[in-house]
Image (cartoon, rainbow, N blue to C red):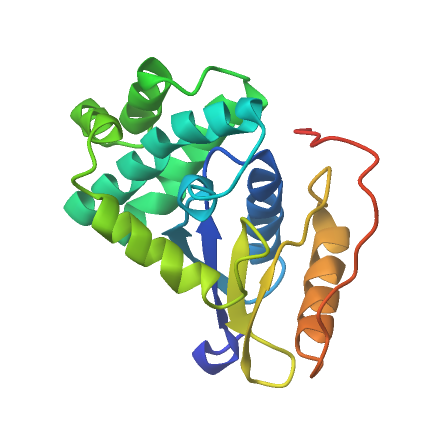
Length: 210
């Protein structure tokens, strides 16, 4: 039996528009079933991260549209508590990525209702009234890892007991069962190694939402 002292809390910063963050989040939910880990969900924003960067127009258009969902997430957390973020993210991500629905008001309203939240929270997508809180949440996460990465960011007690933070892991499809648990153990091991910064290889496949 796992004691409270043995449990770890993983803080996870996400942008619901990012398919790779979505893959990582589904992996972490699987890990929760196999390791003594609790997840706290937080919002970060690729739109904020890249707002002053020179980017291809196609990606800039995607980022301009991505403001809506993160603003809605922040509004939901402010009005109904941070604990709603996990289920709202699940409903948004399922629609955006697994179902391939457009990231528009209709889709966001459906996700809100499915998450047990008022559809009117979708109004937040078109206003900057929550942007100060959004930027603060984003800054909390990105400051842990530096601005040369994106979403997701995970912060958790590492193998040596010290809190560590990292971007990723980037993986597709999301591992299941013991494969998910082994990836978690290995990620904590390397992230806890002093001076360790990066393992990387070229992506040869897009996100698979199996």
